[in-house]
Length: 369
Image 1 (cartoon, one colour):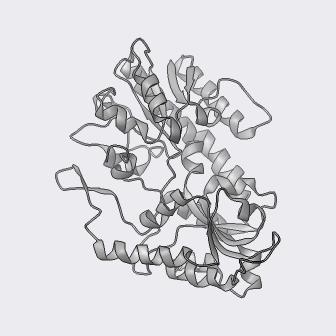
Image 2 (cartoon, one colour):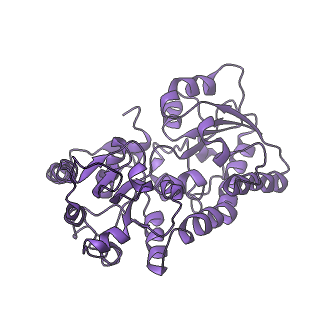
Image 3 (cartoon, rainbow, N blue to C red):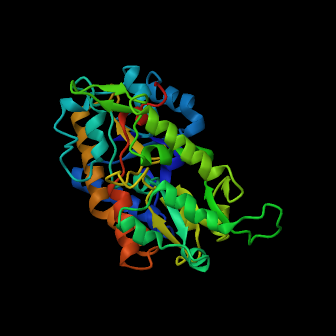
């Protein structure tokens, strides 16, 4: 079974060699072995540059005449481009994927358009779990400045953008100070992470209408959107906040709140400093927290040139189910959640984040939109 894999996710999606020293890599590799034994197949991965800056390279490789892949494991934004160009197989023609099973992301239900579904994603792969966007709170720093306990606010449904502003303002950052101990109130990993506040406010790029088709909905809630922009400007247009390049402020424990994706906390040597929080709500009237992923997660599809689409669909289902049974319990429960949670409340909040991930059809279709 030949699989075109975007190279940047190689070790976390379909590694071709074992690496016992890297427990995450090894867990995914053993998942591959289990699927091969279960279905009587052998994976033949083909790796190609395919991250954010390699759209053209990956699309060209995926559509090159004479290249017959059985499956494609892509950076999240490229399958929709391939679908529009007419290169992908309609997954609704097979019994798999079975979207009622717990290993498929809820969002995939919305990705079906005109009775067709051309790509899907598991909620249990390493890439999908690790790319969820969140806020990490420096609990010792917040305690020192007399701030409220943000984990209590989360469980009470009172963790909002206004609370993030109020608590991060306590730091009173001196931008002229020297040294690594400058206490910043809020830092964000990269400017592109700012979208977490948009989706966290339960705003979408598209919504699915009564006819089952997506429509662009960015002008449906104009007043809310304008107010959200004002809130985000207020958050970052001050000395206490910074747009960073990476998570250096968190690694140096010099920021009260770090906005980044979940995997970034694994760069911390001290697992007791930062506690995960969901993206804050727009206001207390918002019913639930909403989480979005960065674009780095894996989305799977079947090219029209696949020699046996039924087999390809079965393999895709088996990978997702094995992720759910073995990879997620290790990577999420042991490697991430238990390791970086200081108490039962921290564990509960990780589950809130993971269970609230939703990626609307407009986000997955961003290139064509």
